Image (cartoon, rainbow, N blue to C red):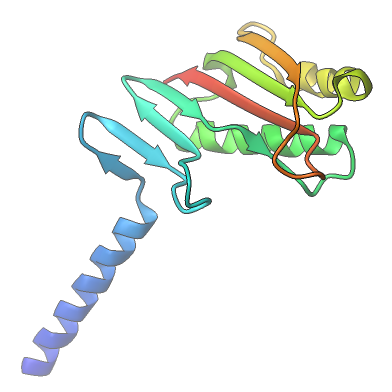
Length: 145
């Protein structure tokens, strides 16, 4: 009986610990943070008052801006889905390109294939030095829930 109680207690503690790790981080004020384990410096998404704020999403694995843009937009889709929304509810988007002269057309073609034609967000696109030399595009979005 003592062994059964100890095992049950240990199982409950492990389940509680796992659910805390796996669950989104909820803080006071109705703020939910997603993807806090990806980088030590930020959340990948923050939900507040039915608005979803995504951090800038990047990809260093694609060999060109087309592949990287597709990979980044797949991440955007995944975080929006995890937050309970989708690209049809985008409000804003900001796109940074490492080389806007070379890559704008190719990135924009991928963007136009991905975006919901009936629900286009406001958008700004600019050139910037990105966090790593192999990163060619970074995309940040905000969406309604």
